[in-house]
Structures are given as structure tokens and as C-alpha cells.
Image 1 (cartoon, helix red, strand yellow):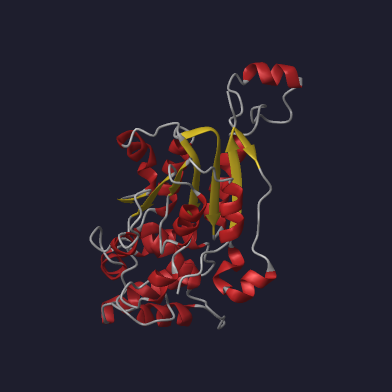
Image 2: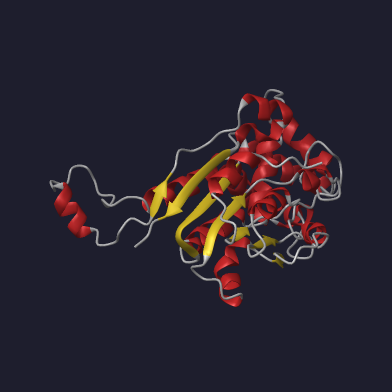
Length: 309
């Protein structure tokens, strides 16, 4: 069973209007979508997006005329809004960047190092190549770069060298094979030592950070004035991108070196663009939620509102 992280807090901060139009950009198992449907009225509309065919199957069980499911990438949010003629009409968008429990607990998906299964890791198994094939054909330098960049793994070099060495002996086809290689590459045994490497490979294969950047580039073009944006991230790479985006679009004064001798008025003249967002205080899960759902411990909810012109 999937337990949506920061569910009450995110729904509350969407400030849902009865006849509003909302987007759940990552349907997952439908936790956020179902709560939004409870809050909107008869004329309210909810569009949900997901790239995972399994999530689309779950979504199709929701029989509600106010609900529309879109099978695709959330980065294409501008195209979907244009298609449905709802540009600048969206009252709120929620984006939950976490992997759902259904994906993690299904050993055939290969997301988790805890369950042994085919080493896949694709959000949509009909697109791209599985992690097993990628590991077999890519270079040691590339594996090292991915583990370092997307997993911030300090032992990236040792792990990448070990992967190349082991794949020459036997193809790395299963999650526990990779887990064993990673564990042996780390000087001391640490609990969940495979997490960073699995995360890095998953992020790379699904192009997750570029998808997020494209989404952020487009989201301000689709929100209505006072439209709310709620984003839940689960690791520092995602959160850094979201934080930087919100900060950049909430400042009147441009980012310039502090050594430049200019007054605030002079800086404001340089920056002709008006600040677009009002940022709210970030929210973390409380102890009770973490005890109920250990996967929520690293979650951060960031909220912003599009200002009126």
C-alpha cells in the first residue's frame, strides 16, 4: 500500500477552489489526486499525468467526469494545457517527485536493492533500455560520472571499476547482483550502502533532473494569477533545483556580485523583470509521519504562488 508523503500539508497549501482547475503532475498511486477530487466541486476539474503504464491502469479505475488522466511526461505540461485549452487557467499544480511504493515493492521493476529482481529501473518499461543493458555496454568512466553526479557517491571510482570487472565474468542482470558488487566495493559495511548508486542509475536512465528543469521552465506559463505550486522532493539534487528556481523567480534584485557598488534602486533598474513568485516556508514531515512511513524522512515540500501582474 502506498502512503502519500506530506499529503495533508500539500493539499492544504494548494488552497483548493471548488470550481478550480488542478493538475497532479505525478499521479503515482493516486493519493493526491483522490484528495483533490474530494475538495473540488461539480464544476472543478483535475488533470493527472504519469509516464508509468501501471499508474495509468490505476487511474482508469477512477470513474469521475471531473478527472482526466494523461499518459506522458510531466515536463510536457505546457503542451497538455495547450491541447485542453487551459493555459493560464490552472489554479494549482502538485508535483510529487518520489518513487511510489508500488514501484519500489514490485521486484520486476528493479528500483529497490532490497528485493531481488530484473535490473530494470525504467519508469516506463516500454521506452529506453533497462539498467542491466546499460551497465553492460557503457564505459567505466561513464558509470563513475553518473554515480558521482547523481548519487553523490564518494566511492564512485571503486564501484565503477568493480562493475566493469564483474560484468566480464558474468552479466549483471539482477538487483542483488549489483547490490553485492556495490557492497564489496565500499571499505566498510554501511546499512543501505547501495541506495546512492541505485538512485544515481535510476535518475540517469529516466532523465529525471532534466525532466524537472523542463517542467519548471514551463509551469509559470500555465498557472493562473494566484495559482499555487507545491513540489515534494526527496533528495538534495531535486530540492536544489526547485529551491534555485523559486528563489530566482521571487527576487526583484538580480543576482550580482556583492562587490559591485550599486544601490538597491540602481539594481532594480537593471532588472526589468518583475518577481513572479511568492515563496512560502518549506515544510518537513513530522515525527509521527516518519514513524508511519519511513520513506518520508527525506521529503521536503516547497510552496510558491504566482503573483498577479
